[in-house]
Length: 258
Image (tube, rainbow, N blue to C red; front, side, top):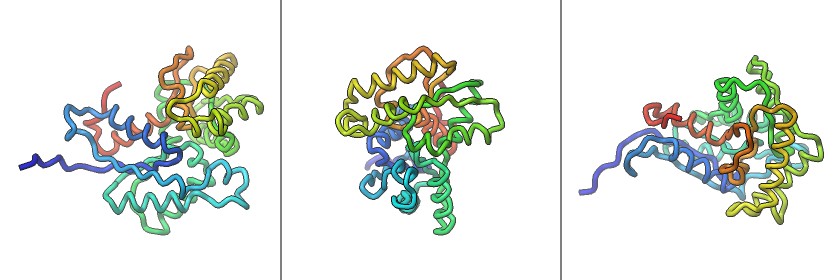
């Protein structure tokens, strides 16, 4: 007779935005879980339906002509709940822009979907507060910069945390490191191109020169390029913060100590 696996809560993952970011998030749940065998890992469900979710930056920059990704994301959350997930995370910074995230929350209420949806940006600021950083640089897509979600969350935290943005040309270069069809991480995820990595390292150095005590990898594809790099200051990975928050919520005894 096969040994019965342990029952336990299920963590849902809204994947596909982008696909490798969803895989990275799932892996970080495993990496941050105390487990001595297959059966001791937490249950996760990853749904990666990229084709159904419109690009978040395109919507934020032109909301009148580009449909909101909120409805498609909500439908995935409903699927996750129906399979058994009790908590969920969206490993995409731009999806947390108020215009999108508030619409998702409204749809969850409207459709009576009870799954607990964590806010990755808010969880990241809780981590920044713990680390006592006062000035933090942000690498992000144009959509995330445009939404101002990190500065808005910093202000709402009532903590004196300054979020440093790059200059406009630098923002475009950072965006290209993610979206460029020839060398961007979305096009070349495994492995990431040297061009994309070099852009992110260069712009990190500029933010550090302006006084950044840490750098937020504010796009969930960035850890694919920067995960093993050293830049002289700590790198804050919202994907890992969210993974640890999910574990803390459903099984705190399983959270691996840092």
